[in-house]
Length: 60
Image (cartoon, rainbow, N blue to C red; front, side, top):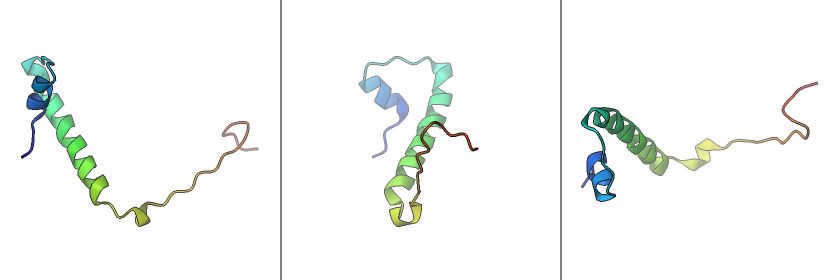
């Protein structure tokens, strides 16, 4: 069963104004979508490389 942001906040004792709920619901749905994408991701396809340049990120 999928919880709504209203239920989650209510369970935590957080009171939200009714005019803020649409924004919170939209963001909550976005976070759930990102969570699902991260869980379903084939991590072999998401390799990244990082390079540390001492002294900052400037290029000479």
